[in-house]
Amino acid sequence: MVVELPLRAHMLPGQSPSALLLDAAASPTGPVPSSHPTERCLSRFVADEMGARRKKKIIRHVENCSACEQEAARLRQLRRTFRDLERTAIAYAASL
Ligand SMILES: [Zn+2]
Image (cartoon, rainbow, N blue to C red; front, side):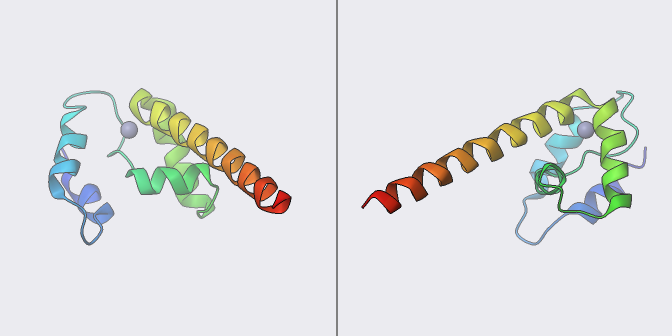
């Protein structure tokens, strides 16, 4: 299987390789079309901060990978929470 190369490509300085190994181990033989995008990659995806080609690739992956679909949903929820928090903080600061 060619999981290793794309995973390496995603690796960032300071990122532990064991996390990537765990990620790969999560789907040993599953019908996942390519390696999982990293969390950083997924969060940029939900923030719509990436190029169209890359985005397309991730959409295709997420459609076929329930683990990443759930992760993307979690990150989306997290973004909403942060936005709400920010709004609350701004309203609070304005009331001081
Ligand atoms: Zn995945």
